[in-house]
Length: 205
Image (cartoon, rainbow, N blue to C red; front, side, top):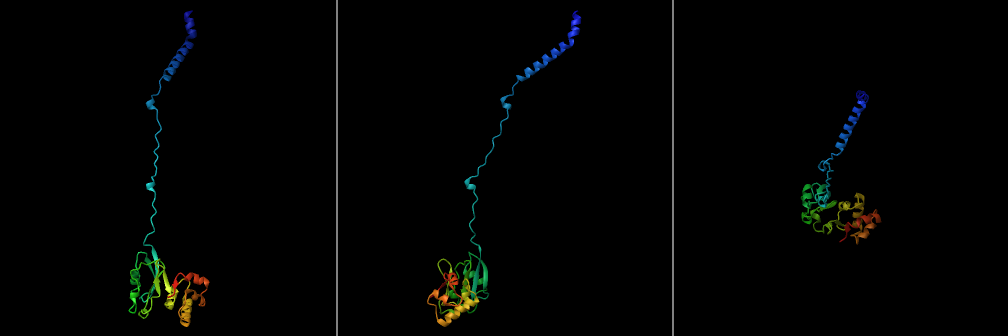
């Protein structure tokens, strides 16, 4: 009878043993904890701050900026020449070929520093007895004495071409020296608009 019971419950018995072994293995594995040292921690982020000392510096405008200068009068090659702000009148005279044999070079300030749109006028020897037509005011701007200027010199003024330059010269020849700069508006072709452009660039002596 015992043998009959063993044969009847043999398979269920082995299944029970296997289930107990599996349960034991699961319970034993759950007791094992991961060490704290094995826990990975996030790496700290490195933040780079730009110091105010690293700000980009703006370079000042170069002193040798390209400019244009008009050289007129008793020079070998009159014309408009490229220059830089560090150059002197003497540099431009040399570039224009130097003085002619009839130039009155003593009336020219060769040491003066040139500026953009500047006019350098070299008078002839015949003009030596009169005050030079062009002068330089303290700010570096050139003014023209309309009572001393030659016809071609008037063309250096803003808004004055050959026709208006001749009209100014003819008016002065017929009526004598200008009494003041406002009298220039009596010249044909010189209205208030043109005079407004001229008044900062002219004088009378």
